[in-house]
Image 1 (cartoon, rainbow, N blue to C red):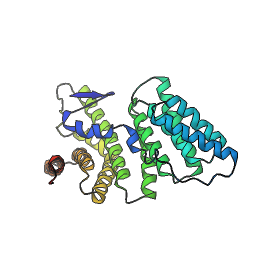
Image 2 (tube, helix red, strand yellow):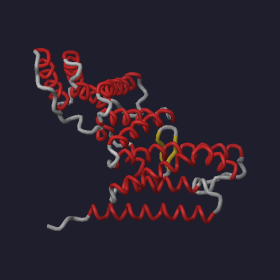
Image 3 (spheres, rainbow, N blue to C red):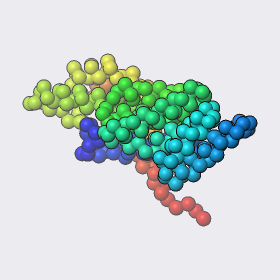
Image 4 (cartoon, rainbow, N blue to C red):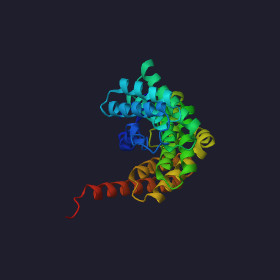
Length: 292
């Protein structure tokens, strides 16, 4: 067993968990690329562009403090220069360390979120800003665990879906969040039962007792179904999406804790096992050398 934050995760799910905890900058789409801006018309706009270009170079060199100062100046000179705002948000986000408890670290994350939200105030359909907020809130929701923040993060991925319904990534993240919520709740129900019934402990692989199962179904059956549907849709859009398959496997294991009869549970666990076999098959094919 190994621990992440206050939750305990089995080694069997470690690969999928690590997928969810990849550095969130990979989820900030195209922020590092300069988009087309309105042609320069004033001296302030020219100075804003110069400040933006300086900030970009400082950012690429890892000089975040000077990059932030340059991006802030560019934003002040031209408040509608979207790239300056995106870079400013990303410069804060690049320094944020998921799980680090210091106030300074939390401030970096919050500054990044605020800047991304400022972009959305100007351009509500900006995918880079939508993904940036969703990714950061997801990271900040883990330590300390905050279910409401996970739900807020999910709402941004759902906004992405509304704008780009054929992109598999936001469906994947909805599934990851639904699994995180249902997994945490499952662990808490098991821990509560074991604390109250010291003579009849249940293992992680065993079904929930009837009273705990009823509570679980009432609160999380809809969440689990949403996660399964989202991950299945991600795989429909990207048939070799092994990360989504790994989480779909985990979601079916959560679904197995909602059913009454053992044969239903066995069927769901078989589907989960088949998905893991598929993941191994895909990874094996990727590792094979390509023919010359």
